[in-house]
Image (cartoon, rainbow over all chains, first blue to last red; front, side, top):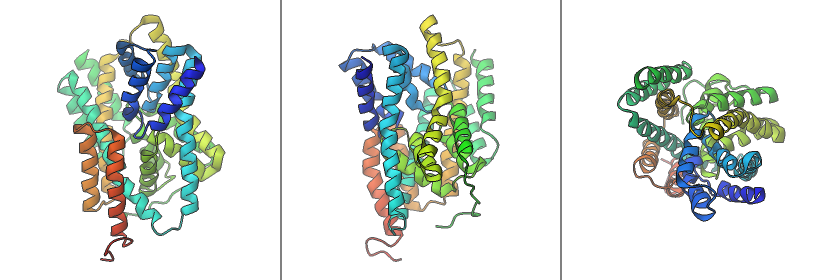
Length: 172
Length: 192
């Protein structure tokens, strides 16, 4: 069982171009539809649970692993999800190091920059849309936070704390 | 491409690498992209804005989490295998501990802790933080018009059209690389 979990998440790791949000539909297909390890409602709840913790969203895999196979399942899912992609990144970094100095490398890598920033922007917009289900207030918080982080160098912790307190006061 | 005042970068020691990534993981509510940039570029100045954006861009086209891939590559750049392991361990260890506690709580009570409104407020703040980070990076890098167009197309495709990210990366990536090479005078009737 643990081995199956490890194998399933290793495969997910290697198709996860674009990270956690990109792999979520495939994760659902594998865990719910193909293997029947989780039902629909549990899958959604576990996703929400993972969102409540800080850290990379990819750790949603760890929570799923926990539910499927306890502590061992969590370890297997986390290891499977992180390690294959990390090994690939390791060898990619080595390749880049060997190619350094090639005239085309810097401009080619620079070409990926706007795509990366565009996808960050998209992630923020998607998050703002999701928070809209709690009314208009979250959108105001998101707008203020956008300007705060964009135009100042103060720690973003202020807007996170402020958003949390406003949430407690107005939505609770 | 001109980049406003050339920022001095510092080389992190192994412990600094771990501590920096520990902070990124621990503070990264709603995803870690915004915090990773803040810690690496603004607070600790391991990489310039452009260097970081390039590593992140590479991390984005590889499978797996972009910030996690960047941690492996940045860790390797400074301290080889131990650097990659330290950065990765720093990034994931605190969130994993917190997740274990959340899972135990969930197993016992079968529901999320009653902090949903607080989390909603934090999530809204985090959404703005992520958007603001994108604006900040775009502004500091002084992107060319065609790069801004690619940026907006990527955001449009992912946020509003709901296209799968591999499709966006595979379509816009090569186009954007070609444009960038053309700007550098390396392909086409370039040299403008």
